[in-house]
Length: 375
Image 1 (cartoon, rainbow, N blue to C red):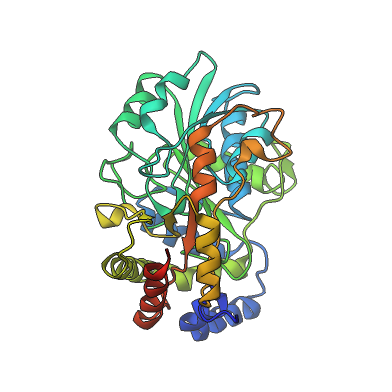
Image 2: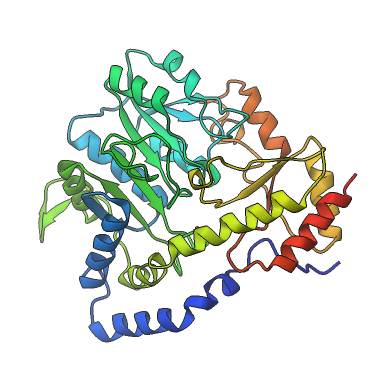
């Protein structure tokens, strides 16, 4: 059957911004600045203001943002090769790749089946004499932060790095180290992804590093620009991970409406919650509302593949985030080959439903009806 409701329609997602995006792109083309320059600086300022943070460095993508944070800390002597970084076992593989590529050791900890995020009650038992940091992931847009996590990090003097690829605009109920409750401003540094499907998505790839640490921000900016602090003066063996000003211009347009879009996502989730009545399904609805931006809206069932096929037969497309956890990927089975039963169970049972600001009440009702009819 033809798809009536796609999982995500990027053209429709960007249509409300079309005129402003075209104007922004024309501005960049006319400016003559095609690497760095005023547009990137303006976006960095706008995001720093939004995040209630001191420093933002625009970079090429979310994975590079994670890598740059770790490499920055290494250059500053706060991390060294072989140090252990605690990380959730059920994250997208990019989180683990960044740790490995920095020649650090990922130490996987199971998630909570109630939140799908890192189980903070398990973190302390994973701490060893080699542990130097925790990389939390705000998976599916739900904040991973509480007093237990903050206490463990403080007592063991651990760096807390946020993989905030999915959580922009969500708020924790417990303030972070800087006093902010915003995801991406809770720990010592955070990586952002602006991949087109994100709540704040570019028209290509882009990312950012956010921190209140001036030394780290300077190191990240230099490493991302071939390791140079000024032209033809390379203080690090760096990378080329700079943000494209065309993407910065697009992101400035969309950042101004991010909170409005996130509110619309929450309203759609409320519709789902009020319309769906099927005891065979478990929904993950954050409480209070602002602890998630609903980057993905997850339903869980032991018969996930049957549900996916049922919805497809009704013309509704879904997705799975993520069907194979990192420790079961071919590139990691030898290095991370332990068993993580909670992670593996979740990977077999979770299904992502359509969730985007453009969804109409009628479309949500159609999806809800299909969910209710599934037996």
